[in-house]
Amino acid sequence: MKSENGTSSSWMESADVPQSASLNGDLQVDVCIVGAGIAGLTTAYLLSREGRRVIVLDDGKIANGESSRTTAHLSSEIDSGYEDVESTFGEEGARLAYQSHAAAIDTIEKIARDENIECGFRRVDGYLFSPPGEPDEVLERELAAARRAGFADAERVDQLPMEFAHGAVAHGAVLKFPRQGQFHPLRYFAGLAKAIERNGGQIFSGAHVVEVRGGDAPFVQTQDGRKISASAVVVATNSPINDRVHMHTKQAAYRTFVVGARVAKGSLPAVLLWDTLDPYHYVRIEERENEDILIVGGEDHKTGQENDADERYARLESWARERFPQIEEFSHRWSGQVMETVDGLAFIGHNQGESTVYIATGDSGMGMTHGTIAGILLTDLICNRENPWAELYSPNRKTPGAALEWIKENANLVAQYKDLLTGGDVSSVEEIPAGEGAILRRGLSKIAVSRDESGALRECSAVCPHLGCIVSWNSGEKSWDCPCHGSRFSPDGAVLNGPAQQPLAPIDES
Image 1 (spheres, rainbow, N blue to C red):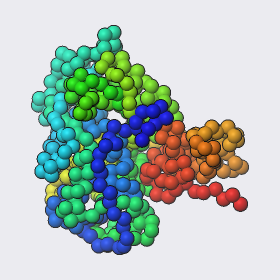
Image 2: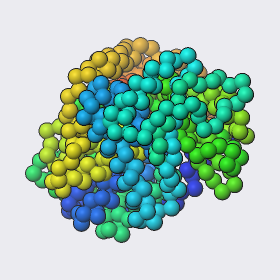
Image 3: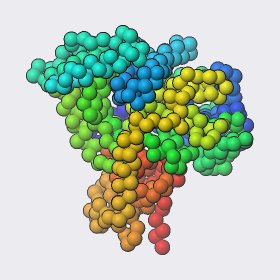
Image 4: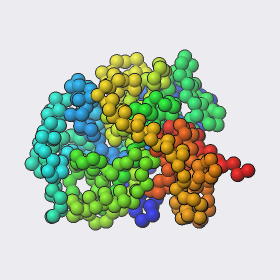
C-alpha cells in the first residue's frame, strides 16, 4: 500500500499472515480472547499449551490492528526510565518491571525457536543517549536505577556504535543496555496463529464484539448475534472495549509517527537507539536481502488533538538525515496508536470487580514486551497460579506517585468537551477539498463531513458514541479520531479503534 507521497505505509507488507475463518455459530470454550494482536495471540498460545480450549475473536484480520504498526523494539529498558519507575513503584516494583520485560524477550525468543518461526529474532544492544548540553547526571541516575532494578550489565560508554554525519548535532552521554532484541512482528504473529491452531485453538476474524459479561456464566456477544460462552474472558483490544469510563481515566491515547529509509546493506549496525528528548526518538535497523531499512520513530501527540502528520514526518526525516549520511531515500511512513498510562506500566489482570474477565491494555510504547508479559501473567492467573508480577500490573492498582499525571491527563480530557459548543472547522462543504474532511455545524448538530478523491461527500455525526466527544479529522490516516479516549473511525464512520463499539451515527437526511 502506498501513501500519497509514494512511500510505502509500512515496512511489514511481506508477512504471510494466515487468514482466519468466520464465526458461524455459538460456541462453548474454556477461554474466549477478544483481540488478535500481540497480547491476545500470546495469551491464546500459552493457554493452548496448557490444554485449555481457546478461541480468539477479532473484528479484523489477525494482527491487523495496532500490533501491525509497531517498530518492534524488544527492550527491558523501560521507556519512561527506571528512575521514574522506582520513584513510582519503589525499588521492588522496578526490580519486577525489569524481570518481567527481560522475561518477555526471553519468551519471544523461546517461542520462535520452539515453533520454528522464521521472524528474524536476534539479540541486539540498545543505546540511550542524551542531547548535547543535558547534564550527565540525568543518565548517571538512570544507570544507577537500572542497576538497582537488576540490569547488572548496563553501562556507560563513550560513544554510540556509529558516527553521526559530519556537522550533525552531537550527542551527550550514552548508556548501553546489552541483550535487547528485535524481530519481524507479523511473521512472528503468523507463526503464533499457526501454533495456536495446531494446539486446538480457534481464531475468527470479522467478529465484532458488542458485549462482554463476567460473573458465574461469562460470555461474549458479537454484533451478528453469536454467543461465546466461556469460563474466562480476556479483553486484549489495545483500549478495553468492555470498560466505559474507569480504565479510560488512567491512560491516554497518543499517535506516534514512523519513517523508514533505504540504506546500503550492512552500512549501519543492528542496534536499538533512543534519545532523551520529549517526545523522544527511537531507531532500529530492519535487515533485508539486498538492503537495510533504517526505521525512525517519534513526534508523538495526543490522538485527535493535532492534525499535522506531514510536518511530523518531515521533522523525523530531518532528524534522521542530520545524523545518518547512509540514507539513500525515504521509502516508508506510517503512524500507530499507543496507550500511555499515568504511571508508565501496562494494566494486566482482573477487570475491576470481575473475577472471570481479564484485560490487557496500556502498552505505554512498549507493546511487544507488555503484550508478551500479558500472555504470561494472564495464563498464570487463569490457571490459578501465583505470579510475582500480578500486583505490579494490576488494573486496580493505586499509584499515589502518579496522581499529578492523572490530574493533568484528565484535565486535558475535560477540556475537549468545549468543542461541543464551538463552531465548525468550515462553514460549508464546498470548502472541503478532495481526500480531506472537516467538522461542519448544522444547527445544533456537528457533522463529520469528508470528501473522497472522486469528490463524493460522506456525512455522519461528529459525536463519538463512546462518551460524546467531538471527533477530529486526521489527514495522515484519513480517519476521524476522538480527542478524549482515542476511538478512531473510517471516513464513513465505521469503528477502527475502540473503546467505541458503535460507528459514528448516520445523518437523518429527513
